[in-house]
Length: 565
Image (cartoon, rainbow, N blue to C red; front, side):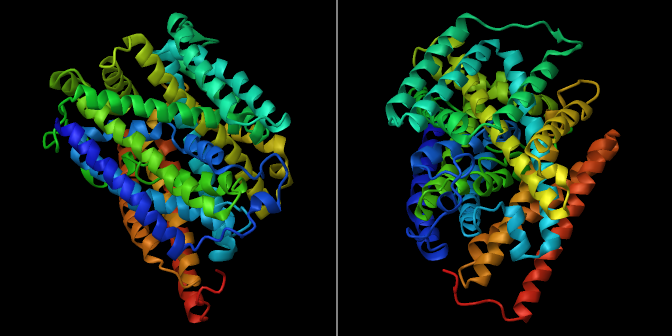
């Protein structure tokens, strides 16, 4: 049995025990989930954002929303330091960091009437902290949208076979949503039919690649696709969750798990050897230090602040029973860990030879810009061992990434609208409370950042923003953990389960943010220097607010023996 197969089996066993044991401890002893607690989905049911949802359907939405391109791109880049550090962080981060964070923020939101984690800071830390956190979340969502839009644009450009399958999927998902929620049909068979149609579309796309000119309307092709995807995200974010978001995410969750199953089967049958070193002691010149960059390069797949925004922004509004939070939150993070684990294996053992691997990872720049391509290549080789033609295999992998990246984009746009509305409430800005105005502002700000971050390559600013996205994302996770920790401490629960990850994440990401800002200064990237400093300043300020709230409440003797169980 090859070393990659052994490492994969060992990781899967650890994931299994993590869910069976640690998540059960969190559910029963720390969060003390109550099956009779009235969730926001029932209390504020409106059929648009608040809707009690079957836990398997909601898990599909939640998992699809958080499992975008990031758990592929991050590990694919991080393998430049060797597969050992990447694998270790993915496995331990998923079990003890991501699972607790995603589960915890979902629980915190449910216990606060479905409010986002940014708004919860008002009652947990203070009114000033709420405004700070909302601004930080807005910046993070801005970065998420810009990054994911350019990832999709690069895939559409590099793998034109993926264009048709993606767009053909949308009307199928909307028809399923209509049949299920307006005609009362069961979800299982329509979703299976939708999945089969999606696979049929893959063959349609493989035979009919959509190859557009290199320049469209005076801009590079990637820039054109960035605008198209951001416009799609803005429109999709306005639709009721039952019409597109839930049915498409449910189909996508089927596709991802089936895809992961096929990829793992291909890995076990191929039995490849590692082409990457366990620890790369001879990294290319210009590669950042392993510590702290590993812990922000691999964000999704270990711990991600964006997950907390999804948990408290959309998933908490659709949770039928509070006890479903364990499955939706913790197992959702576990599913993304499985994707990140496959990304490590595909990029460390999926290349044809060590020379091919060394060629791809010859520089930090090539590793950063070619992360998705490396995954598609390695995963395609695993599928080839099952007799799947190369063009079909790469189309399947690319559409899988596009589908999930677009789902994240859709959810992120919706969250950005929520955040702008909450900022409007906080500062009494009437225009931001208007759903049309907030949607337009979200769209225009994302387009501006994508095009201005790298003026030499209009529309491709997302990948330039990746390090800044990673650090902002992890700092946001740390801030969410502050909220969860203070809630657990106040209610007399075991707050060490969130406090320990909090200290680690905040330390590593603050260190990384300082290094990123200094790097932008050396490169003369003024916009990124300003954005980085602003985000770091807001985070440091909010951390001090959290510490002050702890000492203030402690001096007032607020901590109780779990009175609000």
